[in-house]
Image (cartoon, rainbow, N blue to C red):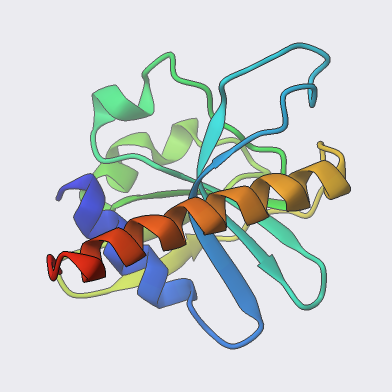
Length: 148
């Protein structure tokens, strides 16, 4: 399964009225007291003011990579193929949830535990809006050139 396929599956699993989704959201520069170039793979915000962070992993080496796992939300999740989950399920921290996907479906297999938001909410909202704007611009460029 490719990252793009996993993105499509989790998008349609989570997309519903009152939930706003954005891929590749850059974290505010000073959220940990130092400048970072850290992004979360998928960020959602809903009308109940709940932030959920999702890290997508497509292989065991990807899961074990040194890349940051940005788990700063009220709820935090891994998203991965079901086969990978079977290989790494014992390595997923207790407070982190997990969604899995196969060729046909995507579903929650492990619930996340609620925690306090680990980043300034106003700065996170700004980062979310900037990323949504960037995604919309990409979409507009594609549709302008009729490249769907």
